[in-house]
Structures are given as structure tokens and as C-alpha cells.
Length: 129
Image (tube, rainbow, N blue to C red; front, side, top):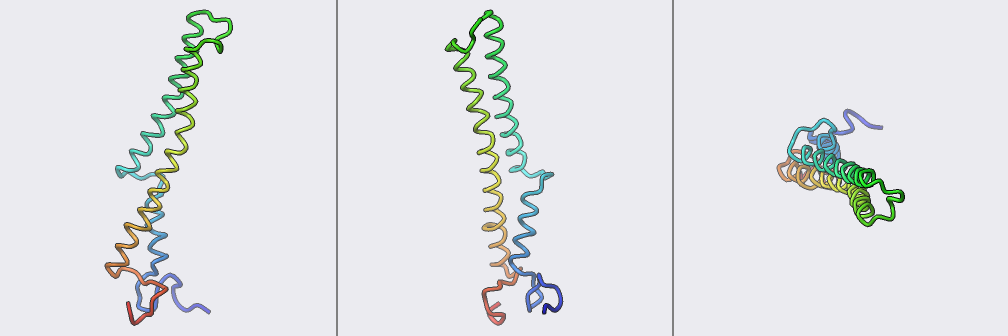
């Protein structure tokens, strides 16, 4: 049976797991305005824009030269390959930013909170904290 707030340790400090959840929620906020969020949004938009740009260049090239079989053209093939590559890199780049944010919330912010004594570590005895 739990007594009191289950996210607070015996000494009144929040549990380190609860502070990690708070840091993680702050890091993964979809409306964030810090520099990392801006870089993440710009890189994703840039890669998606490059995909559209190269696809458009390929269709413009094929249409401008009235190619009857545009996929045989090495120029069209090269532009379509660049378009596909940009599209394939968009998701891994976004996932890399998510991994970085999880690492930053857990390692940088939560460990700093623990070192400063701002949270209660469940794995240590209350007298050691």
C-alpha cells in the first residue's frame, strides 16, 4: 500500500525517475523553441525539400527535352537517385535528434539533478542521501 505521493522519496525529494520523466517531456515537446529543436525542424524540412527539388528537376528535364522514355536518361536517373537519397536520409536524421534528446534528458540533465541532490535515487539508502 502506498502512502502519500508515489513520486516522492522518503526525504521529500522527487524520485530521480520522476525527474527524468519531467526532463524527457520537456526535451520531446513538439512546440520547443530551443536551438536543437530549430535545427531538427530545419534539417528535416531541408531534406524533404531536396527530395521534391530533385524530383522536379528530373521531370522538368524530361519534359523539356520531350523524352519518350525518360527513365533511360542518365541525367534523369541521377536526379531521381538524389531525390531518393534525400528522402531516405530524412527519417534517420530525425531519429538521431530524438536519440540525442533522450540522452540529453537522461544523462546531462537528470545526472546533474542527482549530483546536486535535487532528486532521490531509489537504489541508495535514505541515510546516504
